[in-house]
Length: 448
Image 1: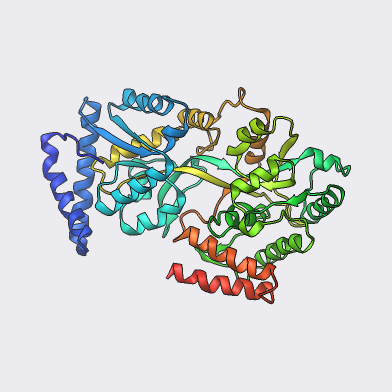
Image 2: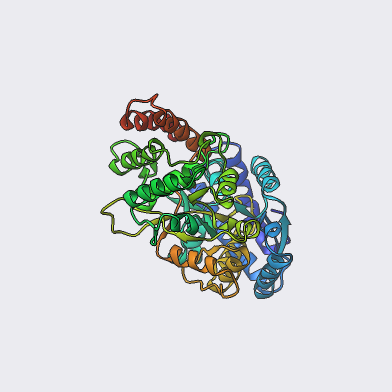
């Protein structure tokens, strides 16, 4: 972000650090001696700037994000003002809609003028980290003695953290209670077989109704992470090994593909899946034409507003028969990172720690209608919808997961999986093994 006033005695240290960063930005490879000197100079600069803040020094951090637009008016400023009162460090909010923020942060990354602290989407992290645009937060947390065990998740690239999820938006399964009641199902399905049978009964008894919906439009392929992989993660599965694709020699992945294909073969999936986007799926459920869907909790308010008579609830994503372990629940999140060009990294890290502190993080989660990123936070949802509270209880019984977060070209990976899955569902690919092998080969190119 922007340069602020430092005490005179820190200028030499900052100039030394700045020269090395400049050389790195031009592609030069510093020697081990230079790296050591840089670390010492940076540490000295951070220590000096921290002392400056405590003594009332004029330090301002720019915080660029889309959160302020989506939170109630004034909430984010109020929270940031609390940090200023505590530390003396001012926070300048740069709040714009998500799409604009993404464009602005990307431009700042390319030009080396990124704001000091930035809101991040997990799909951006890999590229920014490889560009050297965002700071290594593992090093910053270590230098500050921060206990990262309190974080619900950390988004890493090559073993180092570059993004911390501040709040999580969970993806539980929605279920239409009236449709289940129409076939005398009194308990939600807990396993894949029970789910399949419930879908078949609902479809047989209700004309124009589908059992389950999945958006597989390749224009917006998020249905792969939020709807398809949710089945895998709920049964404790993974699509990665050591951070690399592990689609083959992965029995649970193969079983998940066959299970989803089986739902299509049984005729219980909402029609038009290949052109369906998330908004279309939500509309189908809202209009009572789908019994089950996995979707963001963020749509709870919209559904209740548009269909006040619709009787629905949340349930865990059913698991494969025999699985008794803890389930993973798909999440999206508001992530946070620190720019590499930030000249006040120590203060920026303190600001991140402030947002992640249990009390502040709990407040932010409540205002965002989300779940906290600090495992010790205790948000007060007493004034929220009872269904939201139910969803939070389900979330606490699971572990948050989204393995696409932090991967290279993550959206393209989803699209490629989507295309291969459709070929298999349509019978153009002979077997699950062939489908996963083809996808594995395509994915491998992004990890070279």
